[in-house]
Length: 41
Figure 1 (cartoon, rainbow, N blue to C red):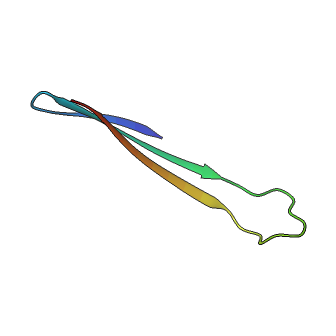
Figure 2: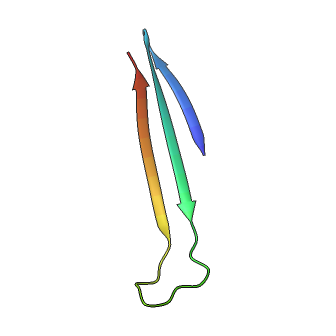
């Protein structure tokens, strides 16, 4: 999911990703969520 916002002259991008584990061996099992914020100045 991506979202772009503009605050006066600055653009900010928000990115939310979810990675589902299918098969795991020899490590912890579980899903991962990644949240990224980036901006242009």
